[in-house]
Image (cartoon, rainbow, N blue to C red; front, side, top):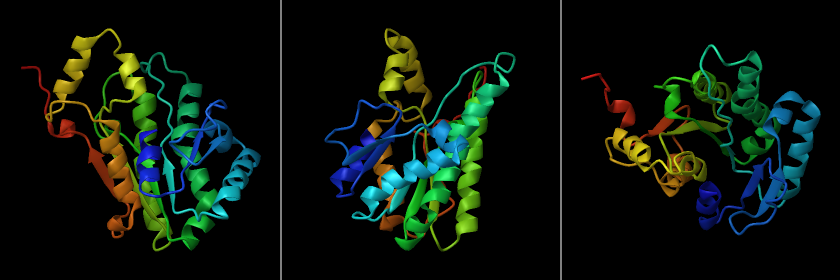
Length: 233
């Protein structure tokens, strides 16, 4: 929700999406449209249906930015992961953002808009049990560069790649494990994980006219973690 809050605070008309059908109203966004990215990636009919729902709002508030933030993180070792785990990961993390780019290409071009893909430090340096997530997010980073070149003057396309961020999901994963959480925080040279508002502000910048000459780029909001060498002694 931090993304929605930051953009709305700056006067954007925010359309949020998600799989939940319960969260249809909130002060954090202006409209909510339920969406299943796996379905959007797999079904042209579902993609068109979703686009039509969004267009009901963008007829009054021109579409200026598409933020591909939703992702699926299936953890497992190489021995344990199933092919369908990779298929689902690619659908949600790579193919859906590409399909949505196609769906909203005309509107974004007309409004001189931009696309922001939310990537991850795992596209650059990862750890055990992350083959599905790291591989698909690496592909997403590549998609950003490819789209920026292919779309040229039409639309700016960038990636924002955070390190550990204090989302509800992260906090839930470390519930009752304060020492493990502190170890994670200490792994970042800055000495902590990111606050969600910090990532949201970076996203706002990349989608704004202040970043008008930035395209095909990846901004690593990583607290320095990718600059640190972890060796055994």
